[in-house]
Length: 345
Image (cartoon, helix red, strand yellow):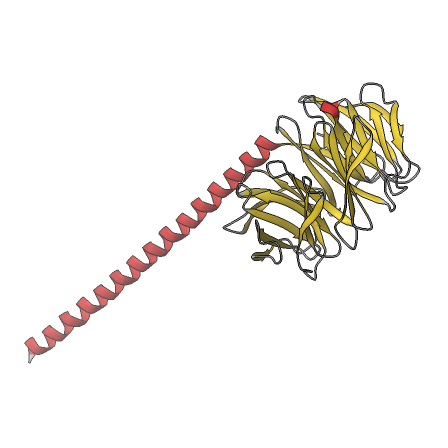
């Protein structure tokens, strides 16, 4: 399933329990769609949320409200049922906002272009925590609820760990000399994986955040979006428009699974039941991929590759046996000739 949004989208998010998906556009518009398996997504409403671009979108309050963030430094709360404005914070940050992330049912975090991260309470409509985490824009965030730690990546090439209980930046990595654009926590919390501008994936061991412990070359273009499929596998969206399945420890690109032609993939998201993978791109398209079909094709392709490799191994084995047989025959002919020669003598 796919729908032409008409403008370049910057973010996408699925409702936590219903078949609804929202997208924020470069024009400042916020769009809400209902999707179904056998039909095209149906637009429910379109509101002009911001005078500047709508960079980030998240469902909060159990899906009753949509929160959006903009370079105009404002955060807007919109009622999902009616599309009407619930609240607007005009000067939520001192710089243009870049990212939003859900923390709990009534709390979310926002990041801006100056590296500041704030935590908000939707009930009180106030800021709970403020962290000066980076020197440049916040590119992505991930939340670990067990330890109440908020992880952030930035264009300054650093990874930050903010402790919400102690209200302080607990740790910050050394500069990686590469812009960090995306982040996921994997391996049951033991590894943090960051995608970069050059296409490299950096792995940090939990508790040892000063420098990455491992890295490997992913796509040849920037990795703008990461999504954890399971503890060993992630899905990446890149500047070349390709969505890939990537294995972590062992580190490898398993194979491409979808694409947006040659247009950069901006964001990825799972539906509430993980039946669909949503992707948006600079081609102005929102695509909903059936995840089971994608992974099924991937498994079939892997089986074909394995079968092909086994056939090649069998052919090599036959060739080796044949060559050994030829050598034995040559040896027998040589021995027979030699015996006949001495017999004649």
